[in-house]
Each structure stands twice: as structure tokens, then as C-alpha cells.
Length: 295
Image (cartoon, rainbow, N blue to C red; front, top):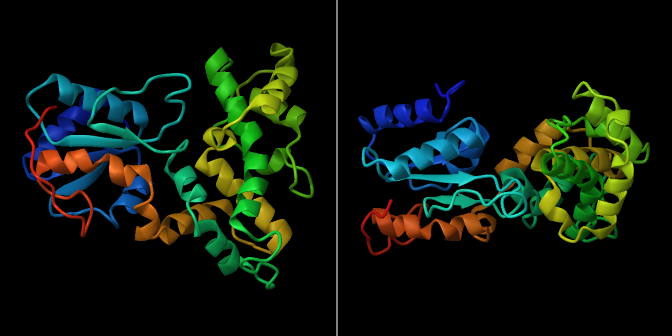
């Protein structure tokens, strides 16, 4: 229903939905996000709405804020480059993920990817707690592959290079032993996917190498898609895992438990929405004292 809508169309659609649904709306970027949150949400008082895009969600929530036609509309959005390249939407009705996107949050959550490695391993080479099989080992190996792609994506956005790193085929630029990324191949492919040549951006390799050498919060630059692809490559090499990245990503979302979800800032940061609505956002959470609508 929401495909190909702009922010104004989405806002109008929300008004139409409100005619038959009095619950508070939580805008999310896509249906995959709905699948995660709907497992934990208090469906009697809240419901998720896929906006099919961050810009549409942000635009619609800003329309809600500017108008008195619609209330009880909130949003959980991917952080992307908020705090690094832009300030995001400064409204209490909007919260952002801890990491680049929701799938990255799930990747860095405790126990999830260790469980996947153990479940998909076909030869008992992965054992919980064994050398090379810890959460730290998994994160280090996957971040090592995902970071160069994410950092080049950041540079492209920051410097206006218009490279194409969307749904990037990580395997094409990864070494045979899945231990590192060929930076020259990475830049070449990102350029060619955008209809450009590497020669159009002289000095980009040197810039990327310099940025990699001084980056501190490495996890912040890694997208969930890149991390899942990295895990698929690493796990195939180390633990005879045969699952593709799409299966890995979907399985990770399903493996996210309530106890781990409660450790995410998403769970805590929307508590003020519960105070406004006078009802808990999440199942089995205590209902707060009700406040007046402020947005």
C-alpha cells in the first residue's frame, strides 16, 4: 500500500488509517522492521506502519508535528549518518537506532550471531566459548570486512562523490580466505556501479586508507546488510556454514530475544511515548502515568 509514496502521500495515508485505527502509529522504514518490532509491541495500543523509506518517514512525521489533524504518530528510524553528517529530526516523536540500522543493532546484540554460527555450522567446528568462536571473534572478523565498505559509503556521502554502494556485493572484493577487503577493487566496483571510472576520483584510495587508519568507532560505520554478508563469508570459511546472507539476516531478526531487545536504547527511549499515550509501548511493560500530547 505504501510503495512509491512521498512524504505527503504517506501523511494522507496515515490520516485515512486513523479513521479505522485509534492506536498510536510507529513509523518504521520497512516491513522487515515491522517483523522485528511486532513481536514485542503492545498491539492493543500501538501498531507499526512501514514507511518504505527514511525520507518518507521523516517527512511525514514533520507534517504531523506541523499540523493538528493527526496525533499519536511516532517513528523508529535507522541512524545512518545522524550525528556524523546530519542532525536528524529533532522531535521527541522520533528515535534512532544505536548503530547504523536495526540489523546492525541485532548483529552487535549479545548471543544472536553466536547462536546462528552454532545452528548453521555443519561440522561442529563452531563450539561456544572455543578459541575463535566468541562474540568478540565474530564481531572482529565481520567488522574487518564491513568497515571499508561502510567507510567508503560515508566518504561518498560526505564528499558528494555519488558512488554506488547500495546492496554492495561484498564477496566480489573480499580475499579468498575472507580475511580482508581489496580496497582498490572496492573503489573500482563502487565507481563502475555508479557509471564512473576510478580515475574520476584520484586520491580516493589514499583517502580511504587514511580514514581507515584513524577511525575509532568502527562499529558505527557498518550497515547490517554488510555485516550479514561478512558473516556469511567468514562463517562459510571457518565453520562450514552454507547459509546465504539473506537467510542469515532473517534468522538473526528471529533470534533476537526479548531480554536482549530490552537492552537496546530503542526499548528505553520510547518510554516517553508510553507516558504520552498512557499505555505501555511494549508487551508486559508497566503502563506509565499519562501525560498530555506535546506533538
